[in-house]
Image (tube, one colour):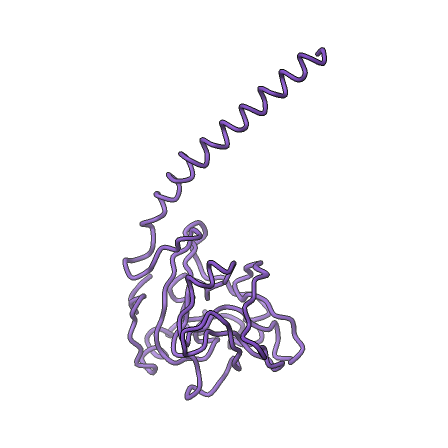
Length: 214
């Protein structure tokens, strides 16, 4: 190519990429989102306005491992907060999220139990306290996070659990380190009667996810 021909070629490539990008953003992406917008397991789940996730809340006082396995019973994971916008969307008084310390050692690093790679955090001033804990929204309406022990006395435990159902990859996601540290036998499979026994003991009311949802 001559310099003039090369510039003309690059110009056409640039124009083509711009047209293709605009087509994907204005036509294809809305169609894809539309296909999934009504794909939640039931009408009790809420389609996220930010991601291809269905969001749900299980009400009932529980420990965090019980929260993880309650979500798993619904083929879902404990919610991961990916951005400040997602944090605003998820903020629910007294609700667990999936941010935990990897082990039950006080200096263990934090991670998302589902394996979500989000680096977003929004701790309340003075939190976390430096003990082996998991994160939750406080009982007043606030987007900042507090920490609490994974096996906290139910008298002081958060009152609900936030789950996310991945429309692209349904199924529970639980990190190996969390399962080995906090869940008997390292798997929720050992809690196969969870929905019939533990949930009944909680006497919960499901405001977003019914107990029978799958």
